[in-house]
Length: 122
Picture (tube, rainbow, N blue to C red):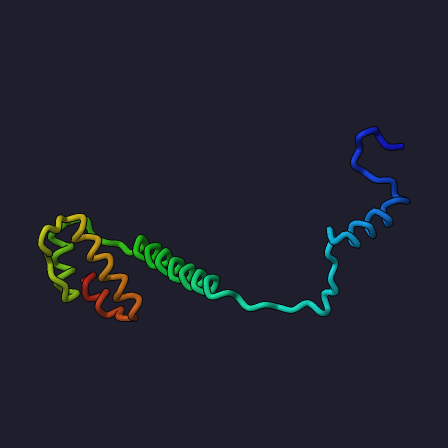
């Protein structure tokens, strides 16, 4: 027995309800063997490319956070000089200089120039 107001249909009437809904176009059942695959739109392809660029940026920042950079400003300047970078840019303070050193070290690591990083550590 079913409760009044219940949405569950009796099992016997289920096939008829399904067939009626399918005939009315409310249910679309296709043969998966004949299904076609559509390519992505230009907008979707651009979105995927943008997503890949963002992921690369996030990964680069993650690697940069893992690089040990000295907090002593004189040491930061020495390592910038050893890396062949300007030791000070106009309007730059110690925190910005430290980030610039971090970026330089990450760039050297990404390019495979481990000698430059080891030189800066010496």
